[in-house]
Image (spheres, helix red, strand yellow):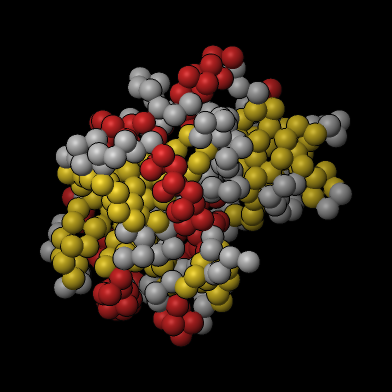
Length: 365
């Protein structure tokens, strides 16, 4: 059995009434009140997530960009200081090692933010391609990461810094004093589609920063948000979750990651992925809305009108915003067009559903 690790603010979450569960190798708050209440708090006001389980790697040196270009599919050469980028690490066999964020701090200086369950795997994969010129430091245990999300996020955070947050554009970041703590990275990114920031805070100041954010957000009725609402929020946006929608075995092109796959450069397995694209994709990851009442779940079978299996659900839930069942799932390419009628097997019943374009909910709703 692998030991389950604790996030530094475990005692804070327990004091707030959090139910803690093992997730990605860490004991994490899944909810404090109810998933529905927490979900709508982020959509309509402001919530704070402790996502300190995520991994952060610091890369520095003359070959840092070359290494990132080699191991990631997106083109990091277009980044400038203060710009972030979504990307993924292809493996050598057609699947995905992980999806990640790439931050350009300075020339030859980058931060990579990776999924908690893949920290060791990602580190070993990147090091395998490191020729030795690039200094790599694992910052994962030194930083805490808070996501403050929702339409009232900026107003909450602005009370605690002189940095003009409205000037920080989507997928850019800045570094400065926040809540009287120097060298905090404030990144206009997130996993909810509701707007806000992600804050990378030195571990020793994390509790102080958390408490000040909670105080600053009190007038907007800020609430702590758990993994349950995090999952429904990201699903409403159609964002992939590693381990569900993308894995070591799934094709990144079938998963809809072609937009961050740049064949203008060479990267791990790029030739095979290029050939796969040229040959035509066999399956597609699509958004699915249930027409009949029900809740689709991971691994439920997707079938056609005749009951023939055409795919499988990878993520599914009841959408708190739409009040209907929504899902992501892989289907055969001929069923992937928006508007196509399909069926999802839920408890031995075939429930009528429809392929739809994502996001299910417009950003900021």
